[in-house]
Length: 398
Ligand SMILES: [Zn+2]
Image (cartoon, rainbow, N blue to C red; front, side):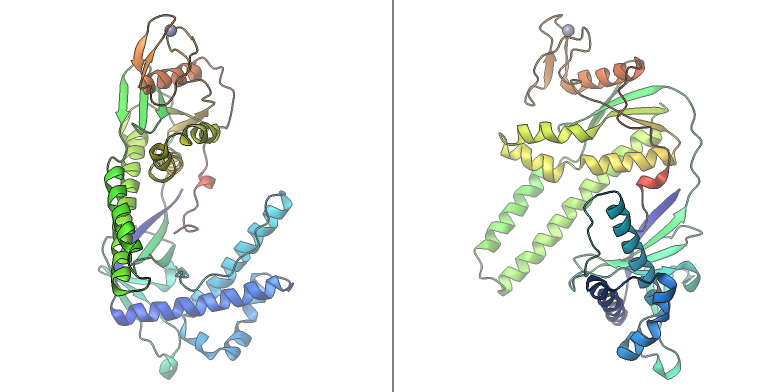
C-alpha cells in the first residue's frame, strides 16, 4: 500500500526564500490555467498543455527560475483536478470546479524522486535555470529524520507557522489477512474506545485528555487579543502565541489518535475488529449537543473520531486485519444480558437494566452488544470490510 512520511526540514533563510519564490511561480501558472478554464477554455489534457509551457515562459520569464519538473507537476495536478471535477459531474455530486489557490497558502511542490539526491541527512533540491540563468543555487535542506527507503515522490509543504516539511510517499508490503479472534469496539467521548473480545476481556483505550486545559488557555489568549487594537504589536504577538498553542494541542491530539489506532491495529492479537458505523452517529450528537455547550465543543473540535476511524482503516489494511463496520443503532440502549431497551442519555455512565438487574459500564455494555451483533451474523451490512487502500490517498492531503 502507499504510505507517506512527513519529515520536518531545516532550511536556511535563503533557501526558504527560494522555495517561496518557486511556489509562487507554480501557483501563478496553476491559477492562470484555472482562470482560463473558468472562462470556458477547454482543458487539452496534460501533454497538450505541457507544450504551452514555452509560451507561458515567454509571457513570464521568471517562470524560468522555478525548477522545470515542478512546473510540469502543475499540469498533472490540473489534470487531476479536472478529472475529479468531471467524475463528480458524472456521478451527480456537487461539481466543485477547480479553484484558484490563494496567495497566503503554500502551493505544495512535488519533486519526482529521480531528480532528488540525499547526502547523509541533507536533501538536495534542484532549482531552475542553467549557467548564467541560474539565479538561485541548488538548495540543501537538512532532514530531521531518516526518510523511508525507495520513496517515489517528495512533496515540499509549509505550515501556518512557517515550518517546512518534506512528505515522502513510498510503498509498503501489506501483511496477509489471517482468521482469528474477534474484538468489538465502541467509540465514545469519555474513553476513546472500549473493546470486548470473545473471552469478555475488556480494553479501555483513553483518548487525548488535555483538551479542556488547552481550550482554557486558548480562550484566555483570544479574549486578551480581543481587547487589543487590531494589527497592533501586542495583537500580532498574541496571534502568534495562539497559533503556537493551538498547533501543540492539535499535534498532541493527533498523536494520541495514532497511538490508539496503532494499539488496536498492531498490538492486539485479535484479527477482526468490529466498530459501529459512524454515519448515523452525527444526528444523535446534534440532538445532545444543543443542550450541552461543552460537550458540543468536545464533539466538534476535540473528538476527532472520524480521523481516528480513517487511521484505523489504513492501519488495519497495513497489518492485515479485517475491519468491519456495523450498524450501531440501539447498541447503547439495549441490555447486553437480556436485550431490554431503555433510554440512555449521554450523562448516564452506567447501564443499570430495569428488567434483569445487570449493572455495567455504559461503553462496555455497547461494546458487548456490537460484538454479539457481529457474532450472531445478523449484521445489516452498512459497508463491506475495508480491503483496499483506495480510502487512503498519500500525497493528496499533505
Ligand atoms: Zn437486562
